[in-house]
Length: 250
Length: 362
Image (tube, rainbow over the protein chains, first blue to last red):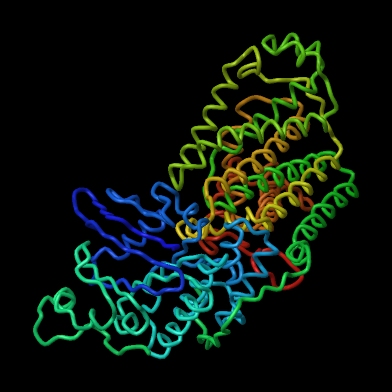
């Protein structure tokens, strides 16, 4: 079965362990959540999966073949896309060009990239934004454009790094619906890294919890919701506390 | 950054993504007005020069066209990649010497360049053929240097390009049997007609435009704005930089060859810090991210330089003779450039292009 996996991955920065023997698997059409308090190593894991950070130990595999050592653009060309905290759009370029960049980066002609970019913007529901300069967009639209850019070329996997940050509850619900469509309609495997734990609990079939670079818990949403270890990681105490933003997005 | 406008409510379209391929050459049709308008500006300047019939003015305009070639060449790399290069005038030097080797009378070459291979000494070709070969030679040199330099970014890349310029200057200043060393290389056929320079300037503008709207140009501009996101979008940044470096190197080589034919004499120091400064200044003042800015920056600053030169030489208005003190030209030019950059840090044009309609930044 097709899958993207991190196997026994560790990362050290000057002796400090950012990730410690992490195992993770994502399969097409499935949404996996990755949560944990600040500094848990979530973004480091995304960087390792996408070639931006070499693991100190362990390997990244796509369908059993090692990806370790590939450059980020080579990882993307193998169908593993990502978004960034803060969007990181090409701010001086129009929205349509932002999506086209991925198309041409993947080897499409500009004409084919324009066609796919227009279709992608329409699919996400922001077709009207195509001619807008990306740097003038409101924050939430930036996030949608970043997701559209990552979806160009129909990647097999997409890693979403805090896509709901700064969104209101209705906007987060819209995003939640979009992520479901990405997994359901496009058959894309999704890794959702998010501080809005409610959104993750409502969307994901499987959730992995990182703390201080190590996996402290994983399982279905119900198991994570009831886990004392997870509450302790977030709140520093197991007594009478709730996970942050516990409104579940159904 | 301009104020954010209200968020557009998304309306998800479920199911398949259906792409409709646009008409062929849609981008070219949408943006070609920019190089056409710039070419018309060049043609208008050339016609005006013909009408005046002034030989000194003819030479001034030839210099303007040469600077257009060089600054457009710089724009192809610096404007699209955002990497400031101090080394491109090195390619101009390479082009100028290739033109000298290929067009000077063989008898003169035999005496001046004893280290040249005999086939090259015997070769003498028309200036335009030599200019094409000079462009190819400079492009190949850019390919060799670029394979190493384009792996660097930011200030490291800029310093490395400066080191490349210093290397080329040192080699050409000391390899006496091949380059004549620091002595002036004379005997290069002088081309006084304005048309070859005009045609080369227009060709350079269209090459720069074609690169800007190409896949490579778009990917490079994205990498300029957000290299991390560009890499995550599948863009091979060193490769796209190398493509631009080679194209811009070739244009600089073409400019160097024609520069040699405009003055008839070259030395390595003709192509060093002074020319590096003035070409980068013209690009920065016009707007590094804009082809229109590159061209109009040259026209504007050339006009300014020439006006200040005339004022230094003295101007008579009626019975009153007027002249500004010697050296004021450089000071005034520096002050004007500082004022422009203080008011518009991205240059006069920023990232915009001249167009008959509102353009979309291609």
